[in-house]
Image (cartoon, rainbow, N blue to C red; front, top):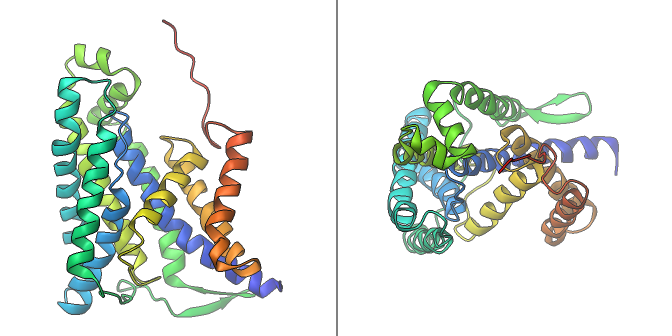
Length: 296
């Protein structure tokens, strides 16, 4: 591999890794208050991509207006998923894991709806105004202003969440994550904060899909693949750690890109799983994960 090809592959891996990282962050946001995963999140990201193509390309919406509308819809979808698939189960038995089945059911519903309504919807979307996907030479690599802007934005998201979790409501979410029963005894509104977290996670998931459209056209069959990629990013970086989700997503994207070039595109997911297993063998809690001491 030549040096220029190496750099070009690295740039492409970082770009797709940013999407994985943002998907992973959205999973973390939903997971934090109650410890529940949304197994429909891959299709939420995919739906964001498809709706961006429809609103921007077919309906002629302004880029930023379309992105904002899609994020609002993602927030509504995330809140509705929590209300329908999580809360009834937790109301009956807080230790139940039946939410795995209910969120998988939501995943199937979204998969069928997307396949029925948007089959054949495939197009790339131009970069937002102010940025471009046109490449320029930086050293020996070809890079675009959108690549730079995407990386900068994704790195700013954990910083924004860091400040958010230090507000009064953010501290309440952290209290729920640490000890739900103790937080409830102190009057923390668990249902409301969980709903807000799922709404925020849904909005971020949709945004990940929106930001992917200048890089690749949506494929209605890739919802499950996106879900797995987001989970791998979270697991590699450390569950609940948004910095880790960025590192995990970028590493995952780069491994897939180099595997596609050096081995075969059909083996890029295999290479990603091998790296995932190696990291978890060395760091079972992920790169930023740490053992937690609890006294009983």
